[in-house]
Length: 383
Ligand SMILES: NC(=O)c1ccc[n+]([C@@H]2O[C@H](COP(=O)([O-])OP(=O)(O)OC[C@H]3O[C@@H](n4cnc5c(N)ncnc54)[C@H](O)[C@@H]3O)[C@@H](O)[C@H]2O)c1
Image (cartoon, rainbow, N blue to C red; front, side, top):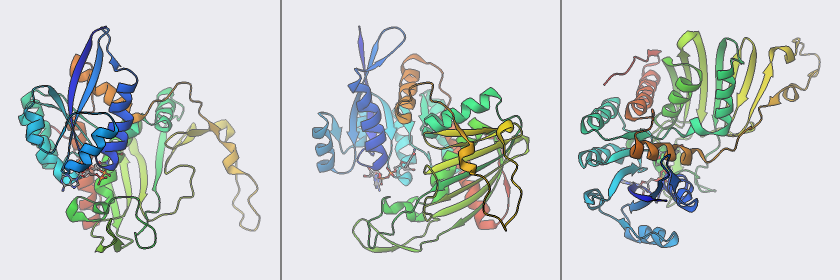
């Protein structure tokens, strides 16, 4: 069997996402399984070149995983003709410039979201990649979660009849950092450093709604900074200048209404950290990260409003689990595999920089809606 090596410049691998999901659970996992088999029998072997700002941290990371290639110079990594793909999981404000440099160096692009901080920047990246003829992809990991794959299965089967509405709850309590350390990086809470709930999560909600339910046509968002002061990684107090919660209403094609609450200042009374309830004329479902439960029209109870009586039914027991029926791999790894196949064989891949720009568009409009207090249309995007 022939083995083909593909060099991947990985920038931002000392970070939460870059390390755990992309290096460990995706690229190193592909190597542990012996490589990525292609249709013609070739085994694709990803060879990461770690890039970051701290020599000591990169060296330690490389040693821990038996990797040999790392550098603090992005230019050096991009000048190397054996690297074909550039991947970016840096903090959001550092992304656009690095992607531009990588496109100019002729590398194929794979990147975390949001692809840029402005729609103009995101569209420009998509244009540049097209002009340079490089293949490109944007992480849309939620589409590959077992719970949402099961929800998609229900939609595709026609289970819902006419879909009426979606209600999403996302969030958990992120500690302020005073008496317990915060479990997310402090830049997430500073607008000037690319933080904020809308910029972080609306890109996800865009592709989840567009692809699983129906295209998003308008947005109204109310945002808040519920916790105005937090403590950073060093324990120093800082002002939270970004929104830590966003309450969004999205109109979808066909008159479907989606409401999604996103908050880092909410305590979890749900089965999973994100849940979407979809109600349709024929049935309803609640999907989380892993599970999806459904209730068909024929199994729907008929509650009668009477506050004088205790609840007469155990509503939560009236739902059924959608079975797995398949083995689910890590969603980030599944998407990496699709992208790498696309780079090498030209196979179909639709989550490109233009799709990524749609996420930035919804975030930008969401922020404007929150500022101006009004509903905004989401126009179609073209390059
Ligand atoms: N797909 C998802 O579900 C998901 C989840 C969380 C974050 N993200 C995205 O991933 C990116 C990284 O988020 P994270 O939570 O891993 O953050 P993080 O703070 O843990 O990691 C950020 C990385 O960028 C590097 N970095 C920090 N400051 C920098 C600077 N000024 N210049 C260049 N590099 C710098 C850090 O060294 C680190 O490697 C963000 O763009 C975020 O939107 C995606």
